[in-house]
Image (cartoon, rainbow, N blue to C red; front, side, top):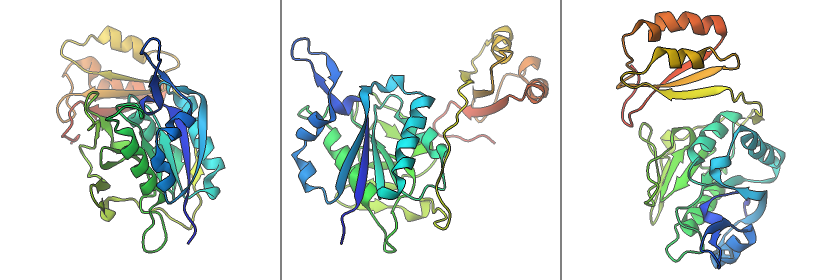
Length: 288
């Protein structure tokens, strides 16, 4: 049986960092350093190829233009590989995984993002397990010979999470990501426990369609007691604004002031073609 072919896209992040011997400061290293730090690569039952950002970036510099670059890398190589693994910094990994999940229409192959909290050359690094397991998941097939998880996901610390349900919860511990309002797609210990009934099933008769155009003219803001209408209106009246993501209280509540009521703001948004989305600042809740 032919080995599965996996494409790794190395964008940067802590997993590929190393300490400068003179200053001790972490700096991005070439992907070859990462491979040389992992003799386990020789044990992988898959053919591995690599594409990389040159130079690697800090994930704080990730943006929609680079999301489109990742989507292009994958779509241009889509027919040549069984799955894709993206090495990414943790600070914006959840943003990237969510964005990519909407940029791939009818995705039929795994796109797994992972990284680490400690550089891969560190003694207690979590990077080796995260990367090796992400490759295994990207390679996994079901009884019908189709991918086990044809979705954009994050794998981190034994948990496979749907890409648009992930949130970073911890900057210090290895349990860095969680999915609060949707179950894990797979829990990994000694064995892989795939939760098939939670995994999307694409239409394999149709092609995957990449979407590269994104409008970055969107703002996210949180409601808080005492928020001033003149400041919010100043933002809302920006001529380039195309969307607002508003973090509300509780289960979607907002102050009962006239300027923020849906009756008042709704007509404004309709007239200006601005999209308004309300989300919650709570981890365990839903808008009713």
